[in-house]
Length: 309
Image 1 (spheres, helix red, strand yellow):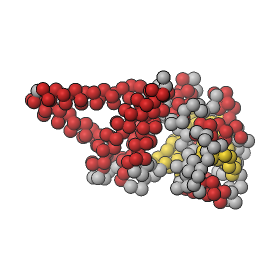
Image 2 (cartoon, rainbow, N blue to C red):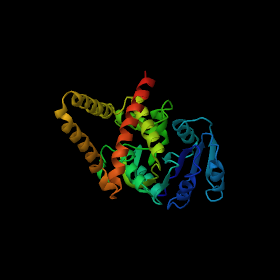
Image 3 (cartoon, rainbow, N blue to C red):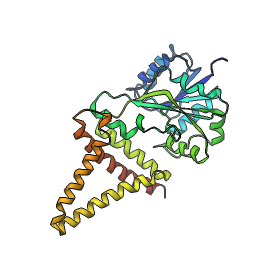
Image 4 (cartoon, rainbow, N blue to C red):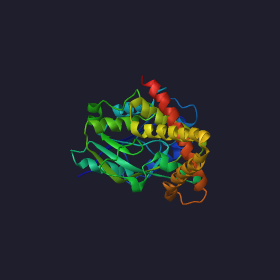
C-alpha cells in the first residue's frame, strides 16, 4: 500500500519570529506532505517573505491571502483549497517532530477514522516558559486517551467529514479549535488519539503574552458556554476569599484562618505544577502565574459572557 497523500495546512498573521522554525520542521519530515497550504490573514511584518523563501525547498508550498480572516476562516479556506482527502494541521508557533506527518496520517488506513488528535509538548527555553506550559497544555501525566480532545496544534481530519461537520466555526476567534472539538464530542465522533504524533509548542515568553493567552481562552470559553463549572469555581474561590477577609475585619480571631487559607492556596499553586519545572525559582513564579491566570479567566469570562448575550 502506498503512502497516504496528505495536505498540510496552517494560518498565519505576523509570525516572522516563529514561521521559520515551523517551515524548517516541515522540510525535514520523514514523510513529506503532498502539499502545504498557508493562509495569511494580512501580515504586515516579514512573514510572507520568509514563507516565499522556503518555496524552492518546499515546491508544493502555496500561500493564500485572506485579509482579516480569523483562524477558523483561514483553516476552512485552506481545507477547501486542498487537493487531498487527508488534512493535517498545526500552528505557526510550533515545531513538528520529524515523524509527525507520518504518525498522524497513517491512522487513516482505517476507513472508520475521521479525526485524529495528535499530541503536543512544550519546548521551553526559560523557567518562565516551563511554568507557563501547564496552564496551556495537557501535561503528559494527565492525558486520558479516551477523552483527549483534538487541538489545531496537532490534528488531522478527512476533508469529506470536515465538510459534513460544517467546518471550523468562524464566529469564534479565540478558541475555535476547542469549540470545534466539543462539536465533535457532542456528535459522538470517535477521535483517535495518536500519542506519537508530536508537535512542540513554544510557550509565551512574558507576563503580557501569558495574560493575553489566558484571557482570550476564557473569553472564548464563556462565549461558547464551555467550562462553566471550572469558571464558576474560580469565581467562587475569590468570593470566598473576600467573604473571609470581611469576616476578619469583624472578628479579629479569624485573621489566622485567613492567612492560613491564603498560604494553602499559594502552596497548592506550587505543588500542582512544580514537578513540571523542577527549579526553585518556580516557587515564586507559579503563585504569581496562578493569580494572573485567575484574574484573566474572571475578566475574560465576564467579557465573553456579555458578548454571548
